[in-house]
Image 1: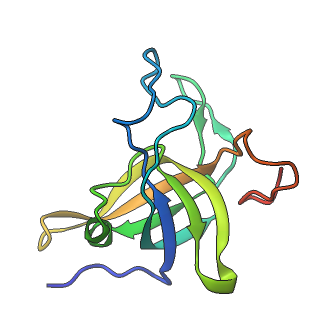
Image 2 (image 1 turned 120 degrees about the vertical axis):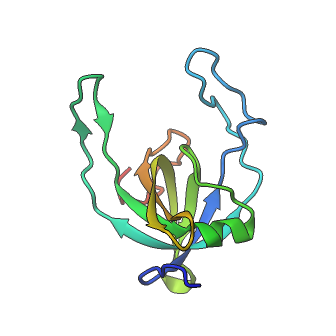
Image 3 (image 1 turned 30 degrees about the vertical axis):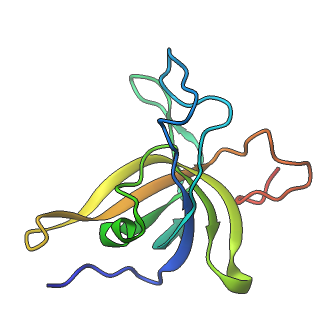
Amino acid sequence: MWYPRLLHPVPVQIEPLERKQSLVDEDYREPVQDAARPKLYVVPGQVKWGLDQKLRPMQAGPELESDGYIIFRRLDLKRVGIEDIQQNDRFVKIGQGVYAINVDLYVISVRLEGHYPSRGGATLVKAFFRDRMPSRQNKGEKTSSGFL
């Protein structure tokens, strides 16, 4: 049995959000202040940068567009102990060695891809990310998009 392959995979450091350990806003049901991210995982992923960076008007209100996406094989995620990538998980480093870049990217949506009958379902996860440029960054610190 075979699995799909990634094109030019690079190591991606992922900090999943621990929802059970984080303080949650009761109205919006999302983490507030310091979200709990106790573990760091390294998984190979296929990175695509450069999607639109604007809002898309929708009937229900504006929808964020992503800065790019990373495709992971679900097999690789499960090997390190991640069940699935979820919204608000964080990417902190992409690549290795001299080509590695420190980033502060957050997953804004996830799409399951690569549905093969021999595998019984989706074999790939496409995680769309956005650089939120949080206020806690120091002045002069370069973000993943290169702007302050």
